[in-house]
Length: 398
Ligand code: MN
Image (cartoon, rainbow, N blue to C red; front, top):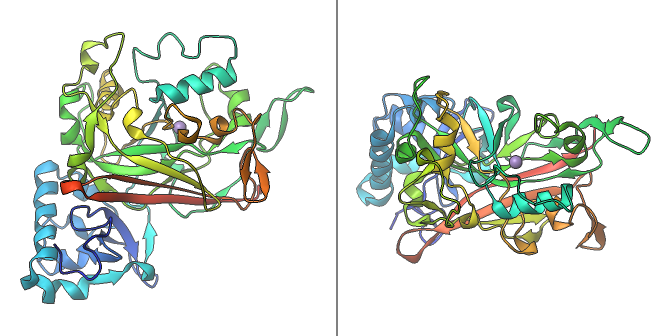
């Protein structure tokens, strides 16, 4: 129970407490934690010695705090919980609560490297059927390693940032043409943010996932399918995805998701030793995709074939180092049913089966369209917590 007005019973109650960076009246960026419909100003709290984090909460991004490591993450979370639940602290803390609707939310993390995986068997198999009809839907390597590619960290943007329709090359019957993408799509994903770095040359074990990963964001990996289809062979996605990747403004700490870990799907054939995680667990995050306010899909993250711990171990098995602020995303989250897919490519089966959206029939994104991805997860004692939404509106090509 918290003394904060309206927070008990909300999906942003005291068992959630996601971190973000906010600004009020154009002021300087401040780290805060969400409680109900308020932001608890942690920069102010640390300046007043209410919370101690070696000054890391007085920075313009979460990076320095995330670099402190799990014991400090847990201690700070415990202290924040104490401040928000013990009425003895109300007098000191209440002046540091800012109404959520009075703040601008900023990119919470200075993203170091960005990697995107391809870990949903249903998604990979749907895309295989759409792009390579008549061939086996999964390529021979797919069940042996989590497929991924390196993306563009500098174009990771916070939820709410408008997305300008990208221009690029696409194939046509008359040869390649250059122009605005005509098959602009989304990918509903879950991202993992690295706090504690690792040295070059030292792989990170599947067992050390929780020592390195600070928390989780929702991701929309905007994708221009026509640009992607023409450019992706032989080296993989490039400009079809690097124009913008949106992330939620709130980073949900792993500590808030303790009740959301569930057994991941069995893996057959058996995986390489460095990918063998015990327990083999994923997260029971229930995503929802809204297209212009209409819920069109509910992707279940628990169905992902490769787990976040396996992804992290794979990312470093060659000795690549981790940096604070590294972001790795799961890949599109798609369940077995059409109502559970995380891309419009799948929802409309390559554009062949338009969906009804209000009075309109749609395949890919039109200028002015807004897509919002939300998610909930099991919290303690049968409660439900929410992850911060990721939303964006498509602007016309320049
Ligand atoms: Mn993706």
